[in-house]
Structure formats: C-alpha cells, structure tokens
Image (cartoon, rainbow, N blue to C red):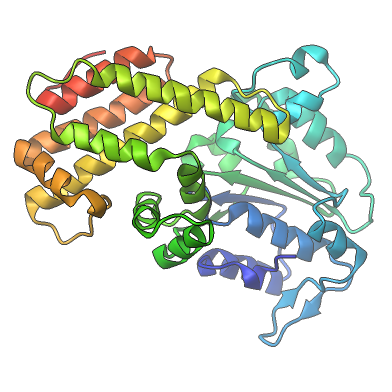
Length: 373
C-alpha cells in the first residue's frame, strides 16, 4: 500500500496535505491538478488510506500515517475498499439504463455522477470510517454534471471526502474550482522517469526523449512508449526537416492515417482492459493532439537552435534534423508555426475534419503562412 511519504517528486503537494492533516482542518473537497502520470491518483489513494485507516500512526517525523495493517488498509492495498469510489466516464457501462450503457463515452456526464457519486454519497459507509470519492479526468465533466455536484462539494455528508483529479484546473467551471482546495502537482525528475522506462525495457535514447517530451510524466512516457510512438515521431521529424516550400503531398495523408491507426488501437486497448467502448471520436482527438505536440516539440527545439538559447533539446536524438528546421525558418516564422499548431489542436476538439487540419499543418510547416481552416 502506498503512503503519503512514499510519493516521489511531489513534496509541495504532499506537504500541503500534511499541513492540513496536522492542523486537523481537512477540506472536504480537493482538486488535484497537474499533468497525467505524475502521481495524482496515487496520492489520492494514499490520502484515502490515511483518512479511512482504523488505527492511524505517527511516524518518526511526527506525521500521521496509515497503519497499513488494519482491515481498511488491507482493502485499499487490494484495490477493493467498498468506501473508496473511483469515478470515471467508463462507469456508464454499468448504469442501470441500457441507453446509457450503450453510449460511446466522450465525456463524464451527469448520469455517471448521479449514479456513482451522488447516490452512494448519501448512504452510510460500509466500514464505518467514512467515504472517499476520486473523480478522474474531471476535465471531461459536462457543465450539467459539474452543476449537479456543486451542493455536495460545498456541503458533503459527514466523513465524506471528494477528490477531483484534473489535468488543467482552468478547464473546470469557476463554481466547481471555488469549492475545492487546490493541490498542484508538478513534473517528476527526468532521471526518475528514465529509470521507470528502463525498467520497462525502453531503450536509453528513446527513454531520454520521452522523459523530456512528457516533462516528467511517468504515466505519459510509459503510455507513449508502449504505443510505439517513438518510431512515428522520428519519421515525422525527418520528413519535416526535409519539407520544402512546396510542401509534401503525402505527409498530410500519412499524418491522418497514423492518427486514425493510433485511435483504433486505443479503442481496442480500452475495450480489452476495461470492457468499455471508448468513442472513436475522442480517441482520434487524443491521438491527433499527441502528434501535434510531437510536431510542436520539434519546432520548439528549432527555436532553441535559431535563437541560441541555452536549453536542452527535447529531440536531442535527432539534433541534425532540428538544425535543418532551424536553418529553414527564422524565429518569427517558427513562432508563427507554433501558434498555428496550437490553433489546429483547438480546432480538432471542435469537430473540424482531421484530414483538413493535417493538410493545413503540412502547409503551415512548409510555408509558415497564416492559413484559415
């Protein structure tokens, strides 16, 4: 079982939690905000273990900690504590309404919140120590779902703690954020990420790239490596470096096809691991967003070279290709490309056809002109 003192690289976040515990003024709702794969959910489970422990202890530093041996701690260690509720969009598959069960999941809707958070929150805890609700991917909460949670976030039942786990806090409604104590999570040390990737048998050069690209996200780095994205990124950067003013008529199609292939693989993975039907649209958007971020990382490196900035290259494994990019564009043009890439990512989340976006990505990278979609 993970304890708060076992959380690596998040001293500020765990320190704030320990301060609350020491003062005996625990908020009833938290917002754990930070990048994926840096320990937000693990920290939430460690906090749940301490809050529900039947015999909490005091460690050598005078900090409260879960005992690790009571029935509650054993249940949490086994991942089956009846009073620790993980809330996520795929729970729609277990809804009593067949229409909801059969939906493709793109958001965390009010139906899931009502059935798996609001309803059990009003019931007595099974073990008698209280209840903890950990809501994952809260950036996918619909406005209706968030509004339905406002009362319980402000006045939850006794001994009930709600933890919202979110990538970016500003994606939530102000009314939701204001009812939660914000705990920020930062990037993990790159050496630690590389160590975890090495343990997963990822080659050193690739591991160094993913540690830099994900800016210290173990989960993100492991997921990207497992998806086989490294070879894709090397190919994309190589083709971008060779891109002339006329563009590449096949690159846009290649990017669209690759994005679609990655999305299909993710849909199959979720189906196999969770038995859930992830919406192909959502999977495609996520895959395309990662590919756009890979392209943007190449141009940020090109900006570093073009301006002579003292910054370690993310794509140090393809330094020659980065230098070619930097030689083709001046800093103003690179800045324009980066701005457009950010815009294209937003457009993908607004149902603009992926093929149209990818064609414009290629044209933008070739000419650095401002294009309209």
